[in-house]
Image (cartoon, rainbow, N blue to C red; front, side, top):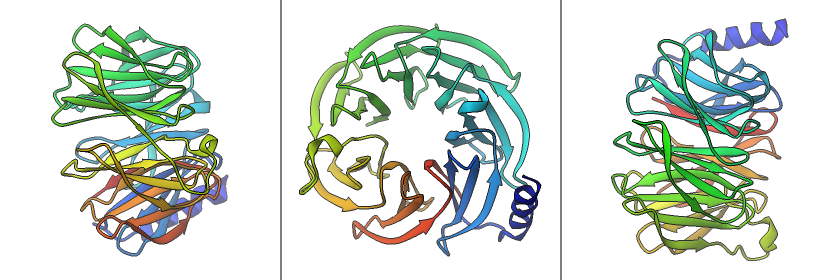
Amino acid sequence: MMRTILAATFLTLAAPAGAAEIWVSNEKDDTISVIDVETLEVVRTIPTGERPRGITFSKDYSRLYICASDSDTVQVMDPETGEILHELPSGEDPEQFVLHPNDRHLYIANEDDAVTTVVDTETRKVIAQINVGIEPEGMAVSPDGKIVITTSETTNMAHWIDTESKSIFANTLVDSRPRHAEFIKEGGELWVSAEIGGTISVFNVADQSEVTKIRFEVQGVHEDRVQPVGFEFTADEKRAFVALGPSNHVAVVNAETYEVEKYILVGRRVWHMDFSPDRSLLFTTNGVSGDVTVIDVAALEPIKTIKVGRFPWGAAARP
């Protein structure tokens, strides 16, 4: 462990100042790999708590929040030094979280406890625990901060949480094993992926009604292996890129017509992704192959594979 820490410290000091980066959590190595966007190389490897999964930056990028799932905590890291500054109470097995637009409240999915925990990052205290369905995972917050979504994998629901009252005001059924959620169209539309169901459900936020359901079919791949998990939208929200798990493909979806435009071959068991800060590149985390695929967003083609740690899971960009 000491050798790993020393190596991480050295790489931290050696990293070029001001370079845009993609941070990737490696859940089997208990590390984060930092990729330089310009060179497309790993420039730092930083130790974390056990089984890091969800990661997100504060608004000013001065803090990185890490779901250290098997450590039952959220760690707060200084990204300049790689130092763990302190830990936040998170409930058991935090998997994903979302930072409220106020840059202060973290909403955390506790998979083992069937609750969403709300933590104040300034006071470092739990301010609410909201009972949700079984095995909560996906988290999303509306742009105005009024609604938070928690998806529960076993209950097969999206739970709609009023952030003022810290209570659920609606539950909507989705297909089997929902994993990820995102708001678009200024908070007017919600997308929820269903891993085993093989679909994305699209909802009208105003009345929680289902608008449509997006299905995927990858040529030469059995339908059981087409499992949508994480997804991200382009800046203009005209396209969504959807990780399709063990199909080893990313789907490109027209977010206006809800039609799939293309499938892009990536690494094995693609989980999540994030764009480079200038949105020209997309970085996918491929768990089984232990690497990251870099996709040229304009060309819709993969341009490089970058080896990271074992079972990369989450991704977050830092300018």
